[in-house]
Length: 183
Image (cartoon, helix red, strand yellow):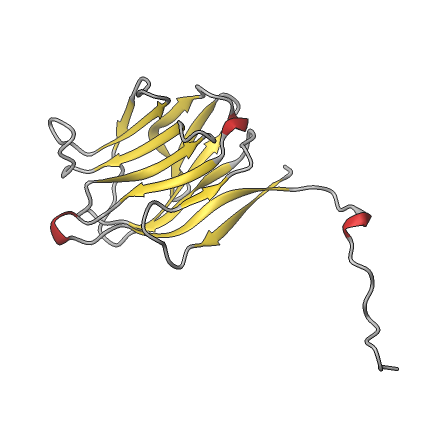
């Protein structure tokens, strides 16, 4: 496979949602994040967005404290957005404890996105593509603020695809082993 994953450390975030550009996606790409989990948040997740800011895939971790659901049960929600919400899919909320490190990856498979938590497939987290993979322009992490003074999610890394290519001799730098004044 001509693909490697690279993890970029995020040492500090400015106000707003952490976001990284994507060069589009291809089958086999895996993207996601690592974070420290907190049960005192209401909701958090990731969006894979196109250049216009539409969500070609959204994974939302909805906690029991999320008052936008009635009844407020913990659930994972997958959806898309292009001026309005697409058909929503729900999946069971995974077993997580405060302070757990969680690594969430979304894999672009032949015909669908599939989600992984700490290397294991998340039950029910798969969604058939509604938009071309090549239209993926950014990965945005959102939410995760602590509710009522509780601990927030601590975002620590992005996982992004790196496009491999065969080395091109024209990309090589000229040999510079000889330093001026040396013998």
